[in-house]
Image (cartoon, rainbow, N blue to C red):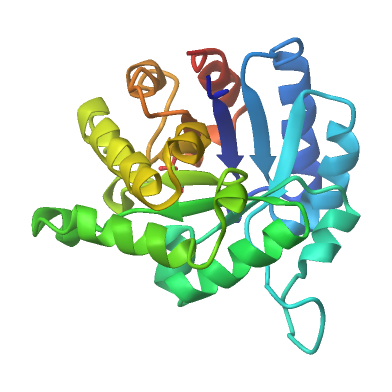
Length: 252
Ligand code: PGA
C-alpha cells in the first residue's frame, strides 16, 4: 500500500512572517492527521523558520529547487548540504515553471535528482506536457522523455525513494484540471514505464502525485485513481483551511 502524500508548493509567495502564520495554522488544523504524508515547500528565505516551527509535528518540509554541485562559485544557487543542514526532507525538481522560465532541462533535472539522493533528500520530480503537446497527441512522448531523462542512470533502489509529480502544464494555476480519467491514464503510463525499466516491485512502490488546480472539491475524484498517490498543490496550499481540507480528503 502506498501512503498518500500531499505537498504544498508555495512558489514565490509568503514572507517569513506570512510563512509562519501558514505553518502554525496548518499545525493546528492538521493535528492528529496521520494517514497522509504532509509536506510544505516554502521559498528559500522562509525555510529555516518554517523548519523550526514544523519540528516535532506531522508536517514535513521541502525546498522548491536545488543546485547539484557540492559548493562553489555559483552565485544565487543553494547546495544540497545547505538544505540537509536545516533538516530538509524533500525538494521539488523540474517544475514546469522552472523548465519554462529558467531553462531547466531533463539533464539538469537528472543532475539535481542524483545530488538530492546522494544527500538523503527525497526529490519530487515534476513531469508533464504543455497544452499544444497534448493537443497534438504527444502527451506520452513528452512524459516518457521527462521520466526517462530525469531518472537516467539511477538504480531501482534509488528510484524507489523518489516521488514523481505528474503535472499537465495546461492545468497549473489555470483552474482547469485534468479529469480523473486523464490523470489516471498518465499515472498508469508512468507506472508502466517504471515497471518496464526497474521491475514490478520498484514500480509498485513509487508514489506518483497529480498536480494542477487541485482543490478541496476535486481531490476526492482525482485520488480515487488507482495509480494516483497524492497531489502537488500550488494555489490551494497558500490557505490553511483549503490545504488542510485537501489533506483530509486524500485518504485512500
Ligand atoms: P496549482 O499549482 O495547484 O496552483 O495549479 C500546482 C503546481 O504548480 O505545483
